[in-house]
Image: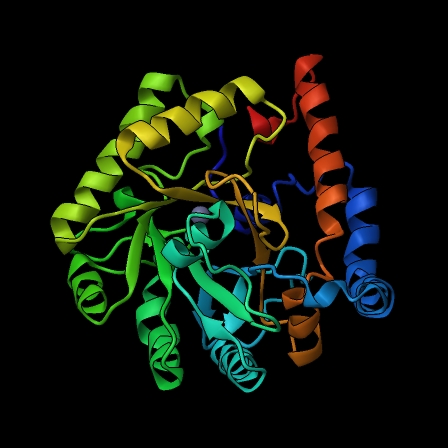
Length: 323
Ligand SMILES: [Zn+2]
C-alpha cells in the first residue's frame, strides 16, 4: 500500500531513489556530488573542450518559495528560495543563455531544424513540475523580469477552481493558470493522479495521458504538447517504455521529460528527455557547472542504482515504498 505522500516520498520523484534503499550510496553521493562536479568533472570537461559541445540543459524545478532552506541535502531538495531563483536567472542572463521552449529544443535534438548548433551558442529550457501556487506568486514575476519563458507540468487531479494541496503545498487554480497561459507560459501534463505510471495497466496509463491533456487544453484553450513523468522513469523496463512511447505519440504528445539526470544532446529520444535538477543550493558556480554538463556523470550512478532496484523487483524483492 502506498503511504501518504510526504517529503521523502516526493524526493524519490526527483531522482527515482527511495532514500532508505542503498542509503549508503546516497549518503556518499550527497556529500560528494558537489565536490566531484566542481573539482573533478568540470575541469575534465573543460580540458576536453566538451563544455563547448552543443547540449541543451533542461532545468527541472518544483517549488519556488519564500522558504530559504528546508534542511534537505541538495540531492533531495525540491525547493528553491525566491532569492536563489532570482540569482540563478540573473546568472543565465549574464552568462548569455537564451531561454528556449521545449518545442525548439525538440526540433534541435531531433534534427528537424536544419541549422543546428551555432558555435558558442548557449540555450536552456526552464521546466517546473507539480503546478504549485508559488510558481504564480514567486517564480513567474522573476521570469517576467528577465523576459524568460517556461513550461509548467500539471497533475489535473490537483488543479481546480478552488485551491488544492499537493505534497503539503498549495497548487494553482485554473484561473491563475489561464492568466499565466495568456502571458505566454506553456502548460504540459504531469498526468491526472501523479501516481507512478509503471504501477498501472496500459488502459489506465492511456487514460492518465489523454484526460490530463484534454482537461488542460479545454481550460487554457491551447494545445498540450509535452508530458512530464511523475516519479522515476522506468528506463530498464523496455517493454513498458515501448508501450508508453506509443501511447504518448497516439495521444498527440510531441515529447516527454523525465527525471533522468543530464543535459540533452542531438539524437536523444524525445519521449525520455533528461533534465538537470536545480534547487536552492545551486549558487552561480554549481549552476554554471550543471549547465555545461559537469553534472551529467551522476546519471551513470542513478542508472546503476535504478538497475539494481529493477533487479530487486525482478527477484520479487520490494521495498515498502515501491508497493
Ligand atoms: Zn511531480
